[in-house]
Length: 518
Image 1 (cartoon, rainbow, N blue to C red):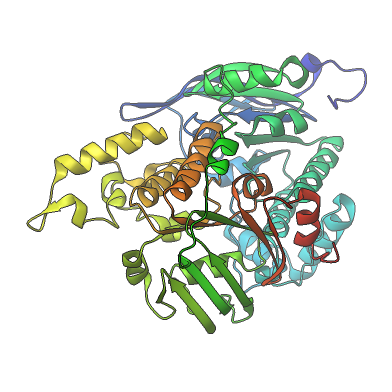
Image 2 (spheres, rainbow, N blue to C red):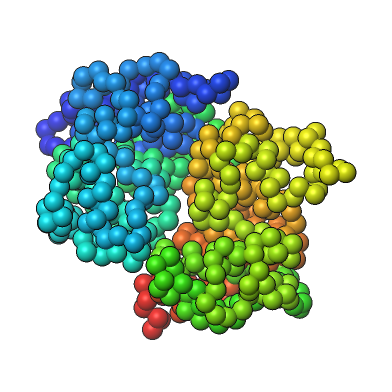
């Protein structure tokens, strides 16, 4: 642990103290009597599965929700946090899981707008000077004059860190910060966090990844079904014990029988289920994001696309789903030229799509869980033009149980669900339709051990049903573990390809950084 010399843990100043926090949503208990202490110069990891209550607790600490009972103390003083502005005034700043930045503006302009909304006035020059200062001090590689659209995901995350530092954060809360980072980017982030700790700040890091928790933490608190199960120093846990505490069972649910399913695969010699020919696609500001890509996916095959976020994967997946116009090139699904067709025609041809931007393209927030579940398959749930609600509710309840979707029921509005539970609902809907080809963009993003393992197993079962899968993921272990072939995207082009017999993690990581002389 990295506390100042001469001071024991119990003597360290308590930045944040939570006692007896409970929160209910109707009949659902989100949090039950939660106690938590975060001390000065500590990286405190809050570990738990989706639905454990992590997001609810973060929302309470940041003034988005109000607790039904319990006390929050900051630096020993009772406080009421009714808004994010209140939290910031107490030195608590949330680094968003998905950076909320405007692509068409510069880093400095985004920071300036954010401060104005909070009532703080900072000149563009002072913002630029602070960005340069923090970049030099902490090893952050962000240019204040850069357009946000030109930044990678990790660089956008660094902008959020700079914002927190400008707000003089004493406690930084990071919600699943490594979900879309490469190994190099994760290590860089952890190095930055350690530097922040050394100068007297504290970090509350939210994650569902056991190994990550053990790697970065000083202290780990395990949350399960809204209750604190354990809270100890990092070195007081063993890996197997920690997995059991998180999931509530002895088996290592992070291990899926990939080898058994992969070896059972025999790719049939049939026409490709997805064929991309010389595809060119623009980004939101008109620049070319996908540069003449050609790629085929065969029946019974998983083709993985690896790459650092921001290298054209988003634009590629949206173009394949019919959500983004193609500048030139062709897209064939099961032999049909659907280049200029919309999402509906592609669904009819057998395409299933798991989007990266789940809230934008995956669900309708004002609709219920059940309505979202049947969005693509009204016909299979209707008779004589009327929806058969008994069948809908039966199938939705089955999906809720299978995927452990934490919800008050099929009629709850989807916008009330956590991000991880929304993702599970989308995956359940897309994979139930027996698709001929699946385009899955970060399908396990934000999911806990059990849910991620289930999704990966379902992807492999789709493959065994002789369907094809295009897996676009920033999780390199996922790409390597699931794919028959891997292509690496860098600056909009495929710069490297390998099949499963020759895949090397080191080689892929070099290719992802543009080092193609591998």
